[in-house]
Image (cartoon, rainbow, N blue to C red; front, side, top):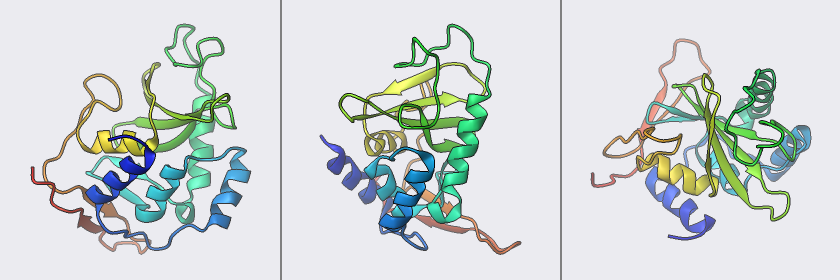
Length: 198
């Protein structure tokens, strides 16, 4: 399998029909990106438009523009900027400066997990290619995945080590998805993707 489009199709096949309450408009995404001072990966926006807000397999959270994505990104960027990093922190691509967050040249948070893991995107200034960096909020090292968000998400849902060595989490059967109601006390909506045959 090669290319962003192929991985995006594979993710959609794994997750099934779009269930988002409302898709983000191009205008909405442009406003969000202007506020953040950077663009976001197109494949990430496609997944968010189709499924967010959602928690996948009880761990991975995706937030939609309607549910405060801009505020989420700004909050995480601020939290990581305020961290005192070790001099020897491992952050691929930021060896000279140490980790940088936000803006066109920094790491942009795309998602997180209930285990305290964060998924960041970084755009290469020379080529415009995207790569993924993951990190634990309690650890001082980051792990690099030179791939698109769709490829990373596909690997994550397939049980790959996508947050670092030994980090795999695989749930057999269909991907379980959950969305919380805005109505207090109302149960969350739970649904599943198509059967994966294992």
